[in-house]
Length: 203
Image 1 (spheres, rainbow, N blue to C red):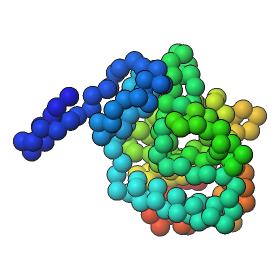
Image 2: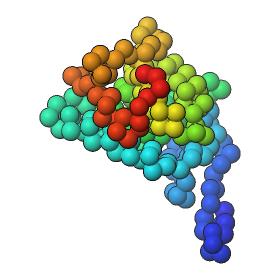
Image 3: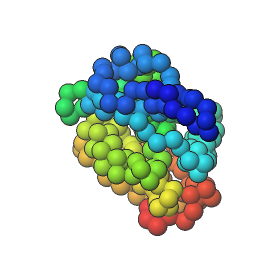
Image 4: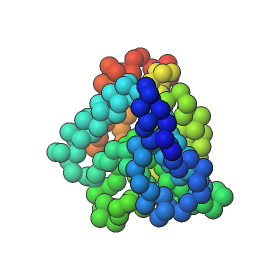
């Protein structure tokens, strides 16, 4: 699809609404847009804002520095992940902002990635808030993502969830930090994220 931007023809989103398998989705040519596959239907995700990318960079650096000294797993940024089947039976491919796999699972992940991550981080945009907080939370819970962190920079809130008995429960902060059971030995100091996010309204 061609669209005009300042009088110049440029490619626009070409695949919205197509019904595809995960294999066909992974084989699509890159048209510069951000897509996910939800129950076998191609959907477009919003482009990230500057603050979104600042938070993503900060988290990636913090966790990456820890993993450099403690190689307990692999951190991957903005990668398509085939989570299996959605509720209606079609394939489900999400592109989390951050995924983490324990070291013993990295070799089996595949490329494209076809294993459920141990941890997922989503940085919420206004248009994705309900989707991240409801739809993705439900899918990540039922599919077995052990920890799910939700960072909402517009509402200045953070939520950290851990899978307990098949259901997500809030991770209780201790001494101003959240300790991950997935990234063994790692604690995220909330104050570091607040430098970009602002003081949270809730934790």
